Length: 324
Ligand SMILES: Nc1ncnc2c1ncn2[C@@H]1O[C@H](COP(=O)(O)OP(=O)(O)OP(=O)(O)O)[C@@H](O)[C@H]1O
Image 1 (cartoon, rainbow, N blue to C red):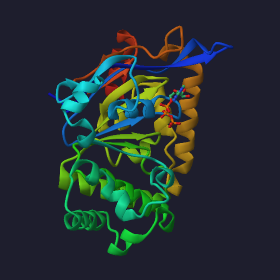
Image 2: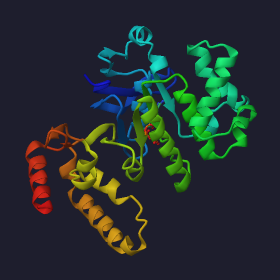
Image 3: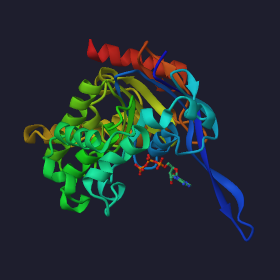
C-alpha cells in the first residue's frame, strides 16, 4: 500500500453570475487525476501556471473540497472529515508555500511561528518547546538569535528555511511543498533544496513537490507527474520523463529549461524551436476533440502517457529505436 493514493480526483470550482449569484458554469481545475506517493519519496507534480497543481496540493492537505474521486492516506479516504480527525491527519501532513513573506505572520517572532504547530499538537513544557525550536533552527542552518526576530528581518531564502522548520516541527509524514523555491535566486534555491533533502533523510518525510520548473524537479524527484489543463499527460520515473518523454507538453516543458552551458545554447535554442514546430503542426494528435488530454496509457511498468493506445505504443517504439 502506498502512503498516498490519489484516485480519479476531481475539483471543479463553481462559476456564479447574475443577480441571484447562481452557479452557471464550473472550472474543472482538477479533472480526474490518479497517482501514488510512496513513503519516503519525493513525488514531483509539474505543469504551467493554471494547470491545477496548487488545487491538487490543497486537496491533499484537506484545504479544498473535492468534487469527486478519493485521496487515500494509509488506506483511509481523507476527503472525509471524520477520517482526517481519526487519523490525526493535520498533525501528519504539513504544507510549505511559495511566498514565505505572506505565509509567515509578520507580527509574530520566529520563536512563536515555529512553535505554533508544537503548541497545537505536542503541548510541551516551555523549556522543552524552546529546545525543540532551537534544534529546528539549527537543522535549517539558522542561529539562535533568529528566535527573537520577525520575518521581515530575513532574506527570502532564510524565510523559506523558517517555513521548512515550521513544517517539520511536529515530525510530519508528508509535506506538500508548493513551488517552495520559485521566488528565490538560483544559488539560494539550491541551498533550500539541499535542506529539504537533508531533512527528508533525517525524518523520513515524503514530499509532494509542486513546481512549474522541470529543471528544479530533476534534482529532487524520483517519480514525476506532468499536469496540463487539470489532467495528467505523462507519468514516469525521472529517467522516463527526462530521457524518454513522449507527450508534446512534456517536451515543451523540458525545452523551456534554461541552458546554462554557453556552448550548448545554440543547439538548445534549435531544439526548442523544433519542439514548438511539432506542437504547432501536431497538437491535435495529443488532445481530444474538446482539447482535453486523453486517459493515460501504460507504455512500460513505470511510464504512462495520455494518448490513444496505438499512438502511445508507436511513439514509445520510435523512442526506443532512436535510443538504440
Ligand atoms: N477558488 C477558485 N475559484 C475559481 N477558480 C479557481 C480557484 N482557484 C483556482 N481556480 C482556477 O483553477 C485552475 C487551476 O488553478 P491552480 O491554482 O490549481 O493552478 P496552478 O497550476 O497551481 O497554477 P499556479 O502555479 O499559477 O498557482 C485555474 O484556471 C484557476 O484560475
